[in-house]
Image (cartoon, rainbow, N blue to C red; front, side, top):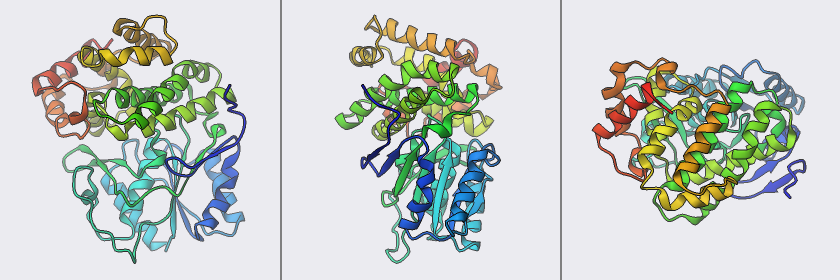
Length: 389
């Protein structure tokens, strides 16, 4: 039996420190990286939470001149990243601590890509050739600390950023930038509101499902996806009802991290559509994924049939066919009070064609296990708007 109450250190895929209360090790981690003026980045919603002030106090007690930047929206924008870059440079900072859910960590990671070079932010877009980095001006050390069990993005430098000119989300990254350390402290997730626990938890489950069913040969990612599902599916209702359940919170945080590793393979149409809905309507990413998931599962049903038994097995389901899997997913969404459709999130009917066109430009569109046309995507968005599940 896994002991989620004990501390653990892992080195894959980057150095990870797991355990309750291990946030207290952050000052020493910074000092080990030569940081004296760390730049802590989080989102607007987290800026005034107690753990942020506690982190800042611990850094300053260790003799570091730390600064906080929190002007990051739920869907981080390019102008916010560039403003953060300027704050970093103006303060002569020497490292970045990215703290929060997906938005806070994406903000910190995106800023880390831009501060020590003059490349345009979109030069780092996922599908472009990575720009050359001057070895005399490398990326700053980056430490990632998730405060939700959702995004799972703490082990990579990938960041989703909204292009404010096109109102589209793009993934930016560079292969030379990796977090030097990750802290997985389940206590940081204890006071997450129930609805955010649900939305971020389903986000993690979607990562594992979409990562697993991508039709690429990557057994390391597949193993991470299945273990992620095994941990997330039974523990998400527990933490929804019992937010201070340490072992369930720990299982969720580890499962989320594994699910994040799994989508190195790619993602699918849930994310491709969700990215564009979030870019236009500033909806919560995990919630948007949750609403879109059933529609995309129905579309992909025949293409993912061979992978269903493995997923149902690790989830502990009695039925090992698509109907059993789909029914269990929808029952979980109901259990977590997830809205039924995109209309409930404020998405209008006249957005269908525009969102479909943008979806086809998302990197996750190309790795969906079943090919789709614009007409197919328009039909899915229409279903998600009015029927959902």
